[in-house]
Length: 271
Image (tube, rainbow, N blue to C red; front, side):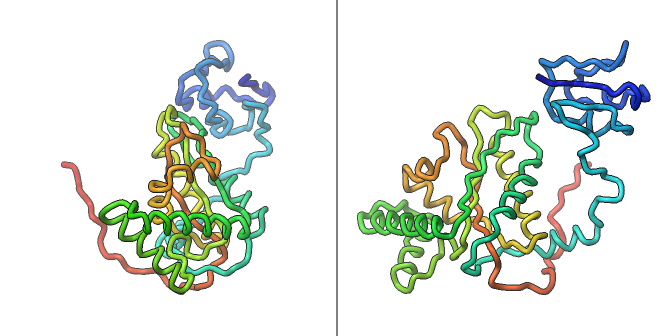
């Protein structure tokens, strides 16, 4: 049920809701009406209405945050992007669960193809659960190494090295000692599952760093997922999902003081 409603006292008949609708299902011929079957549920109509006359999906436009005067300063956003570092040293403290929920809610607002909104966030919220997962993964990888079943090439070398470091002195190369883990996935039949999951994780990462939360894209755990057949199912990821990527996060045990200088971007100008 779309629940598309117009506040007649507020509506100025500007037609912005119809003009901006990506699905083209709003008509202004008589009065704004909507073809419910074709609606993407993107809420563009609610967001674009200058007077807050449009309500859809039961959302009250007055409860949305006004964009004017509330957008980030471009220079500060640039500093965030350039100053973001991969964090590989973490404190041993859990983050506030409410903070994790807030970050996930914001990441849920990341764009998805055809507004599918089907990304699943699989998250470890407690370090005690993380420690158990860490032990299980390292034990499984150690067994595969002993049995000669680690894959050849790059992945096998890295996973084998991770097992060696873990057994030697408890150094955790897979999860970097982080107290939390986030994995994104989406149904295979979603319009853009691979892209949606990466966009969501990127959004999570940037917002996390604004709140002092460190993150690192965890390619090592992705390798572990590929060699431990039931690991994805064990952490609750449905069989019909495409894996996006993994990210560990937590309170950093390191502080960076300035941006890096990467030099010129690699750009191909079409002429």
